[in-house]
Length: 137
Length: 137
DNA sequence: ACAAACCCTATAAAAAAGATAGGGTTTATA
DNA sequence: TATAAACCCTATCTTTTTTATAGGGTTTGT
Image (cartoon, rainbow over all chains, first blue to last red):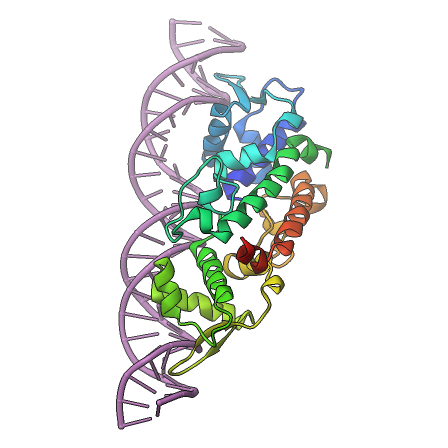
């Protein structure tokens, strides 16, 4: 399951996508719309910004805005940023690889092999679904 | 990512699958093979048994054994049992449905719609991959 | 009778997730 | 140029979940 962080991020991105004609949207407005803690959401927007998905403007009249087209923001990117690996096992993660303690040899591990296939199929889905798909509803 | 419970369950099922000619396999042997705590593994095997995936024999000379063909044990079943929902959101889970607090209306939520599609595609994968695939390596 | 091995429940310890706090910096505008 | 609005940043606290342990109960082959 997605963490609340990722869920909130998706809601925020959706909100920003719906208000693209506006210069900047306030954290406050997004937080209120979805009943999310202002401060918690702030941290999440910060992360999205650092990852290059959002732009922001400081000072009075400032706020956040999308700096990419919705079709260029795949779910895989949002999930990886806030939740970490998409793979089901650390030993098959492309972005967060770690060996599995209970596994003597990856080369001989059948679980590893199958999970690589699952990962590849899952990625196909999550890389193809984008914010655009959410906005189209 | 899969929890250790699910990982251990997959290792145990794999071990049992490889030793199907034997009447019963000891918890101890599986635990030792993968460096898992005996007691923790015991709880997991119990769950698998209650779910109808394993049989057991008590008393001296007892142990656990598969009571299904490996191709009849899909990953989806193991994951659901030990980790819970496969869906990325509670509001699109088939087996563990719950509404999302921050969502005013599922009918109007674009995230919900997309996650239903992701769920269906993911299930296709996890229902088709079985213990047999792991054993074949 | 006895020891081996599964069965069951409760609790503790560790890790992760969720949330809050508090001040810093920038900027529009009066 | 003072002020208030709004983002920026880091640290800490709380809660929940996961992981692990404990301790005894029950069954069964020999």
